[in-house]
Each structure stands twice: as structure tokens, then as C-alpha cells.
Amino acid sequence: MSVMKNILKSLPAALLILLLAAQTGFCAEPAEGTMSADTIKYNVNTKKILAVGNVIIKREGATLWGDRGEGSMETSEFTLEGNVKGTFPAEKTDLTADKVKWKGTKSADNDGIAEAVGNVRLTRGANEKIDADYILWELGTQNYTAKGNVNAKTENNILIAEEAGRHKDRFWGKKVTRYEDIRQKITVSADSVEGTTVKEEINELNATGNVVIDFVDKEGLKSRVTGDNGVYSKAKATFVVSGNAKAVRSDGKTVSADTIIVHEDTNDIEAKGNSRITFVTGENKDK
Image (cartoon, rainbow, N blue to C red):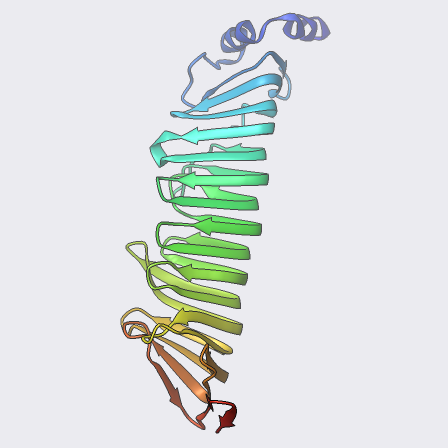
């Protein structure tokens, strides 16, 4: 066996792949994929591969590049490190990171998993980009979990948070410092948000903890509404803030109430329950 290992170590990478095909049933173009590199070491007992230099892994039209790679032929799991980049044409997706683990085993829910760490950027289609320290993406779906310095942008939305994710039509975020609806010019921040989408547009959103909503009202003045909780409904075209609710306009007017409702279509503010307004007239403050 030691003689066999020495022979394998001395072979060029391309010839090694052909030899593996003859000895293990792993052909040059299997359904599972192929690996090439400047140097490849293969353990015939464990069926594990170590590749160094210009590593390329291909599987079902998708390709990953990196400086170093290792994995298992039996589990169809490979990890690439160093200047990793990938392209997934069927998903219209590109991926870059310091390190990526690619699990190719399909399930009823996805076509495998790409788990990326370090300076991760996931670009999907022409309008979606997600930057984070860590991203787990379920291939064949729009599902993902992103953690650490998350900055996600679509054609109409911007999300900056410590953690964010999506599963089918549900999305969520934690420690959200900015969630912006570009079209409506409304920005939200909160300890956590979660909601649902319909045809890539937000249908409902629930924000909890230190909720802040910034927008421009119907008179063109900047306004801010704060509270403990916030609920957005597309059907009602409203954002309802409750719990220590307060609205402040750039002209000095302030409204406090049990509940404050921001009407999305008109950007009107409606106060309900123990409402109180403060406004400025000249040099005097009138209540």
C-alpha cells in the first residue's frame, strides 16, 4: 500500500484523476463532479482527496476555484480555502469567500449546501447582493442564513443587520440597524424583524425592540416614529407602532400616543390613545 501511495503522489493531477477512475470507479466526468489541481494526493483507504494549487471543482454546471481543497469522494463534500470563487449558472449566482464547504448531496428541500466563511459575497441575478462574515446557502432555492456584518441589497430593499435569513417566503433579521424600502423611502431599525414576502415584495413585517421608522411625510418633511413594537401590513398600507410610541418631525412637532399609525400611501401620521402633540411657534414652545 505504501508503494501505491508513493506512485500516486508522483503522478500529475490530470493523470491521477484518470487513475482514480480505473481503481475506484470514479470516472473523469462523473455525475458527482470532477476535481483538478497542480497537486492532488488521494488516500485509497479513506477515499479522501487533498489538492493544492489552482484547485477547480466542477459539479452539474457549477464551478468552484480556490488555492487549496480537500474532501471525500464517498460523501461528495469538498472544502476550498484561499481566494475562493464560484459560479452557479443554473442559479444565476456567483460566490466569493475565504473558505467554502460544498455539500453536493441533494435532498427533497435543496440541491446541496454551500457554506461560506470570511469576506463572503453572494450575488444572485442582476439585482441581489449579500455581503457577510458567514453565509449558508441552500442550492436550488432562495433560502440562506447570513451572520456577521450582513449587508443585503435587492432592487427595492436594503438590509443591514448582525444576522439575517430567508426560508421560502419568510425572512428575518436580528440587530437590524437599517431596513430600507427604496421605493417608498421608508427606513426601519429594530432589535429583530421578521415577515413574509409575496412575489419578492414584503407582505407583512413585525419589528420588535427599539423600533425606529424614518420617512418623509406628505408635506415633504423628514419624520421619525419610535416605539417598542411595529407591524407593517401591505394589504392595509400601514405601519403601526405601539409601546411608548412617539413621532417627531423636522419642523419640531412631536406626537406621543399609545399607538401611532403611519399610512404608507399618504405618509400621514395617526395617533390613538393618550395622544399628545407639541409644536413650535416662533421662539415659544406651545403644548
